[in-house]
Length: 272
Image 1 (cartoon, rainbow, N blue to C red):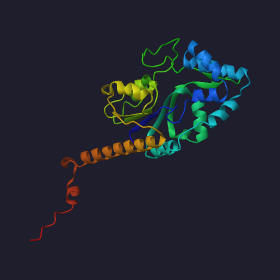
Image 2: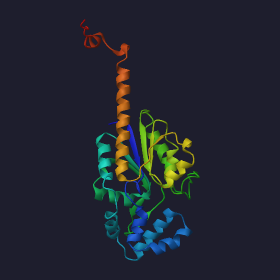
Image 3: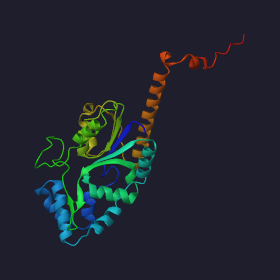
Image 4: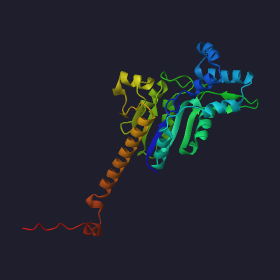
């Protein structure tokens, strides 16, 4: 296992669209969604829409079939599998919901590659309808972040992940995202980390306003092909740096025993 933690956003990062919009549009409820959108927060609206779908006879099976058709770039799954094979700890931090994400990952057969999914709760209740709840219960305990929507502050999630592995200070993060909600966690990364924003998407625009606020090294990407190339490049860069540090620390003279020194190749004499 390497010391690399890779955090993926989900919508428009792993998949190539917004999963909420995809389900609403594919099931033919776009007009109602747009009508209600100005009246409540997005996360609350999605829960309301799931109630409307259920009342109109849309089943959980219907929603799953729509999710199985969701678009994804053909290089995303190879990138995920390659990163996992190299020993990286893969996690998801998303403002979608657990039901959508788990359904998609299971269908794509990549669920087991992720150690953790941080997202809004989504589950099927006893009535057979999907409930979508906020990650942070903003009615009881607002998260207090002015950068993030009321239901989820991804920066606080990154802080929790950092704290959960605080005993290992060698961990290095690579964060991939596209939306405005990915800006707050980008501010939590350190100089040893890497931020991979999707170019010309909201998080990219926010970062471009003042790049000096981002301590992490920034590497932008446009599509799945560039995501894969950039991610593999960064993973290999970290592995090489780790290996070089290990060699450097192990090969100090005080760390070399006499037999080890004697085993080094002798200098060959130069012929006159």
